[in-house]
Image 1 (cartoon, helix red, strand yellow):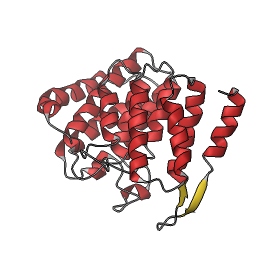
Image 2 (spheres, rainbow, N blue to C red; image 1 turned 180 degrees about the vertical axis):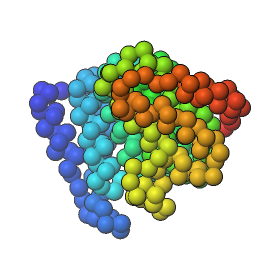
Image 3 (tube, rainbow, N blue to C red; image 1 turned 60 degrees about the vertical axis):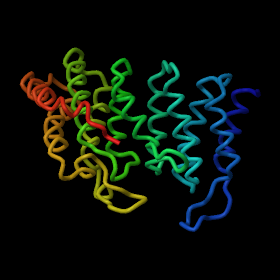
Length: 265
């Protein structure tokens, strides 16, 4: 209810409220602080300017403190709901997606063992009315976000391949837009790791990129090689993507349509 400046200061203070270190050596956040930050995201009276600060604070807390599984579940649920709300600002949607990268729990800790963040990434990926930058960021999440061995990456690779084809069409219509570069990066790292830490096998680090998460998957390997032909030109953001590369990717998509109906979780 106070001024925007007052709320901004309060959010900065709340995110720094810690208690003792956990057994893992991480500082634990005060549970009341996360409740307050989540409350800002769920409050329909708060403007997006406040919600942006709240989402950034939640990401900070998740990255720097030990957050119990139930609170991580709640964060993933609230952000998924916020993304379902008509969000007009691409930057805000991207911030919400990025916040999901800080969730370390692959599945809910209470009730049905549904995925926490992967389901949101897949939903965003499938929404063709969603801005392309947001869909590509969700593809990055499929390769980099929380997951477990129960997830089948074959149908997810098919979905990312479809997105890459969409991206190639948009890019060829209007090359030069700076947004394409990040789209290319996100598509590339949906499949690959950024550094050697991305090959870690144990928590808190886990293999990054679908090619590492599903190392024996033929659909992942084959689609990845074709998607790279789209992603790299997007990153360099010059010229046009050769039609032959688009045709080759489209042929693979059509030949593997059975993956579209395959359960992934």
